Length: 201
Image (tube, rainbow, N blue to C red):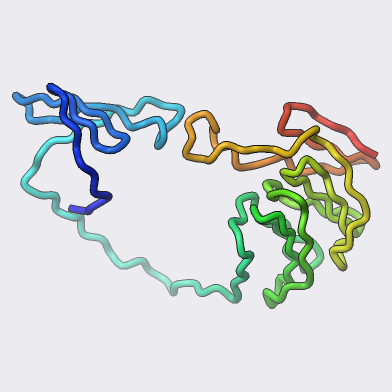
């Protein structure tokens, strides 16, 4: 038995409400029947049946083989790093929801520089020809120097700052990520939150 949470059930006839879970009670079968709430599974209707059992025996599990891996270093970004990192030339580049882009030495984990944009970073930085391109939720695309983090230019790609729904909102469809920049033949290509594909010089 594993406790997940403590809630006060609400009873109405044969219906039972437990937090976001809604069940119908079958007295004859002694079951609670419902579906997984949209807040947990926003796309699919997953049936869920609960029944009382004397106990659940945990299966025997063998200890994993091998030697557990230990991190060589860790880096505290100060905010969630949803979009993930980019590696280039011995440097790891990553952006956080606090709007900061960090450059970290891949071998040591030492921070080389940080740059703060005007909105959350929901895209992986793109590196090309000594420059870093990253889109932020303030509606701007930034070009930074990969060696120093110095801003080279910024350009507006979305008319107004992006307001994202929280990931537990069923309407969000996991609206946690933005479009990375692709560089090809002297052009920058990116998708925007309002549904456009842009090509920039």
